Image 1 (cartoon, rainbow, N blue to C red):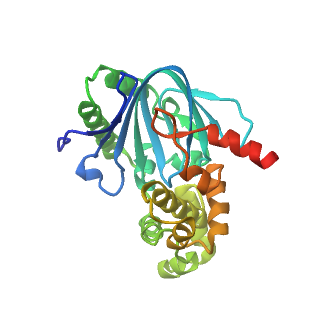
Image 2: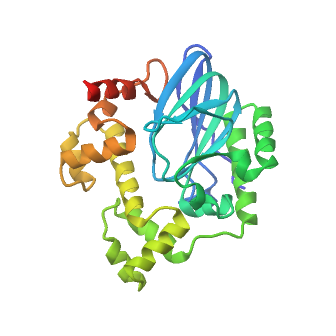
Length: 299
C-alpha cells in the first residue's frame, strides 16, 4: 500500500473546537473513491447543517458522539448514527450534532459501492443506513481502531487498508456496460442522450433503463440529473465571477429558471440562497437557510 502524503488542514478554529483535513486515497482507488474529508468537532451547543447529494454513495466513518440526521422535506423523526452510509439518490438532509466527534467522509463511485456493500447499494439508494447494518461487527471494530489513532494520516491509511481488504474479498461488481454508461454520463456532465447510450450498447431503451436501475439503484436519467446538479453545485461554491445564468448555461440547463427549479429540488433552497449561505464560525452550510426558505414560501 502506498503511504499517504501528509493531509492538509484547510480550516480550523483558534480554540480546539473543530478542524477539517483532506487526504487522497491510495492511487489504486483513483477514479472509484473520492478524496477523504476528515472532520473533528467538539461543540458545547447544537449545530445544524444542510447536506446535499453529490452523485456519490457516501460512507461516513465516525468515532464519538452520535450525529442526528433528518430529511429536509419529510416530517420524519431525527435518526441518530455513529457510522453510516448515504445512498446515491438520498434526499438532502439536515445533520444535528453537539459534543465531540471525529468523522471521515468517503465518496464512492457506483462500482466501489457495489463491491464494498456486497451488491446491496441499489437497495438503499434512496435512503441512509447505519454501517453496522451492512458490515456488522466490522463496523464497530473499525470505529474502535479509528478512535485509537493519533492523527489524520494514520486514520486515512487505516481507511485505505479496510477498503482494500473488503474490495479484494468482494464477489460483486458492476456490469461493464453499466460502468461504461455511468462514465459516459459523468464525462458529459449529465448532458447526454440516454437513447444514444442505449444504442451504442446495442440495447433497447427499456433494457438499458432496467439494467441501469438494477445495478445502480436509480434510472439513467436520474443519474444524469444528479451529476448535472453536482457540477452546478461545484461551480456555485468555487467560482466568484460567474452569474447564476452563466452557471446554468455551463451545466446544460435550458435557462436560469430551470436551474433554480432543479437546484431547489436537490437542496431544498434556491441557488442564490445557497450561494450566499455560510455557517457562522463553522465549516459547511447552516440549516437555518431551510427554515428561512420555508417561512419565505409560506409568506
